[in-house]
Image (cartoon, rainbow, N blue to C red; front, side):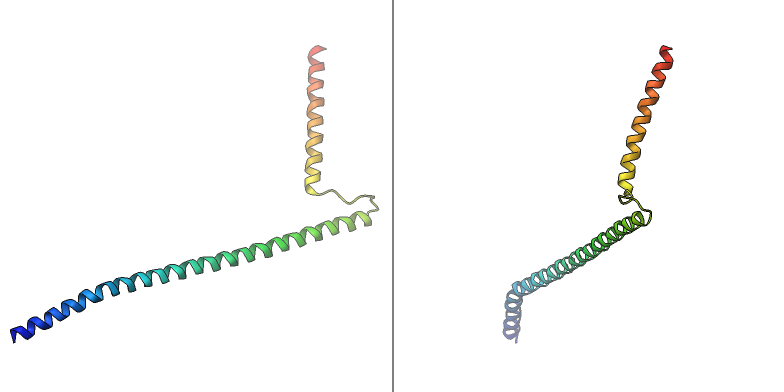
Length: 115
């Protein structure tokens, strides 16, 4: 009976020793699958974000076209030869005018000092 018990325990040890690398490989495979799923989800999310960004850019481009068209129509209705300036053009013009005024103010201050 003891011999049979020792034999069965030895068999269990052999089976455990054989199963350990299989269990380790299975665990690694499960971890690799989880990593692939995560990367796939991240890639899908990035793809969706890229699509959303492209859609928003298209909406912005269309809005800019609509604004430009409205500026041209308004200029036409007002009988202007050129369309109304854009906000950027108006800012540039204002900056230029401010520079000119600052220069004139500096000149006037200098003239007052010499007078």
